Length: 268
Image 1 (cartoon, rainbow, N blue to C red):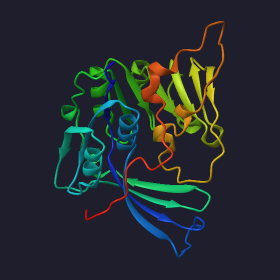
Image 2 (cartoon, rainbow, N blue to C red):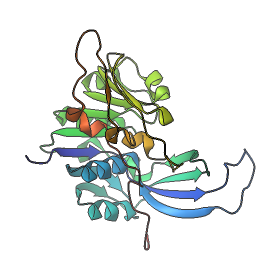
Image 3 (tube, rainbow, N blue to C red):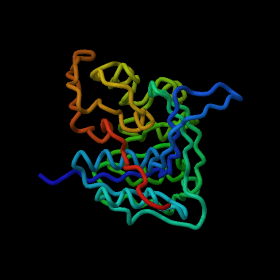
């Protein structure tokens, strides 16, 4: 059986991460942090997770002069022929992570914000994954070409109702779900330490509870539905119908317990 073909249309960021004992209060300075420069972005994280689960993955996005993410995607065997480049800044995420794994994040979109609808070609993919760290017209262009659309509606932004109706699967947390214009037909709701729930028209059909693990950096948790694909699902019935098979929606239930992309080992 051939590997599923997945095209991820989304963001690629350089994550500038400072690990500290606790998060600072407004106006406060905390010393003693440990710094790392890590490839990231919701789109790149999902592409790597899908590749590690055995899919044949293509990534479509835009980067600037800093090619850290591009090199990391190539190292994972991901097709990056759909990546557009320019001489501007790549997307950057500024991240603080404390000893408990809590974080605060500010994203400067850079080249991600310059991805145009004309740049998007999804090819013969079995499924297309998108997020909202790129312009909406690029997301809509991807959805228009897709056989199966998985939309990670993050960050929480106004989304056209037509895009929600077009999506076969929508991944959100509680805040992002509240921001949607209507209930998706199929929703993967991430609940942080409580795991994740699959909802069909608002009714729960499957729940996954994560195991107890030590605190980690959860920066990519929402991107990947971290751990949920590796946890036995507690199947439930909704309105007399059997729960849908999650294997067909594997692209929306990607999981990893290690950083999605490797830290930078060299120059920018």
